[in-house]
Image (spheres, rainbow, N blue to C red):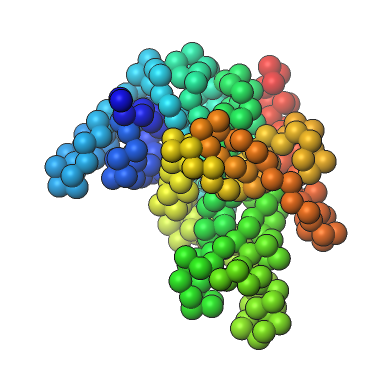
Amino acid sequence: MARPKIALIGSGMIGGTLAHLAALKEMGDVVLFDIADGIPQGKALDIAESGPVEGFDAALSGTTSYEDIAGADVCIVTAGVPRKPGMSRDDLLGINLKVMKSVGEGIKEHAPNAFVICITNPLDAMVWALREFSGLPHNKVVGMAGVLDSARFRHFLSVEFDVSMRDVTAFVLGGHGDTMVPLTRYSTVGGIPLPDLVEMGWTSQEKLDAIVQRTRDGGAEIVGLLKTGSAYYAPAASAIEMAQAYLHDQKRLLPCAAYVDGAYGLDGFYVGVPTIIGANGIEKVIDIKLDKDEQAMFDKSVDAVKGLVEACKGIDSSL
Ligand code: TXD
């Protein structure tokens, strides 16, 4: 059987890291696409030349032509401009909306059967726009944010509790932004919910609140340190986990920016929710019960995303 084909639209910091991880994990053959001629070709060749050392057989190529993504099984979209210090995700809206239009049209024409994972910010609005421009089924177009946000939450928790991060699970809902909703009630260490751990005296409410806030600010913290761009190792690893869930029909329960129609009282809207990812893309949206405070935070987050989607419609009248 032929190897799966993975098209990476955008070959910048995350795109290059995605290509490297996909090759190391032997997920399939990788095509790097970018409008900056030379970058995708150079990164593809550099990673391919690590193959003999690492011992992988994946074929890698770089291109500036959409024809080369033909028949891709998975497309991961990072094309656009990343956030610079002092710039909010929303500032990126106008620039990246235009990028989503060209990417959506390229995917529609050349890879209409692909599972498409959008990473470009502002995430929840961009994944919505990409779906609109590509016309692909909603279950095949999804945004990556929740896996990254909960990975950050898990990392901070594992350091606070001094336990392996393998034993920490975390749940993050809502939009990828300052209004994201880390759910402490559904986050656990070895199956013990975080509020119980506070009661047991393993940590304090103040410390837990600080970790929740640090999770919300996780992207900005990295931007502030790097100064010349945003995070790329953890974002790439997170999207790879989603791609693998699809390619291997793993039925993973992962938080993603998915199209929600019916659940959470929403009618046809992209926002971060727990989903099942398998061979049919987003196979299910898990509608969990929220208490009053959580619902209020979720509503606030949904409103923030709604504002962005309306702004997109104001910029591009075809939406
Ligand atoms: O959780 C998340 N979703 C995120 C999102 C976490 C971290 C970063 N996140 C966002 O991902 C970030 O705000 C950006 O919007 C994207 C990509 O971040 P990256 O760090 O990879 O940005 P780069 O290095 O600038 O790469 C972007 C590439 C660059 O090579 C451009 O030449 C290319 O995109 N680009 C295009 N490619 C194809 N087509 C078009 N139109 C295009 N425009 C720019």
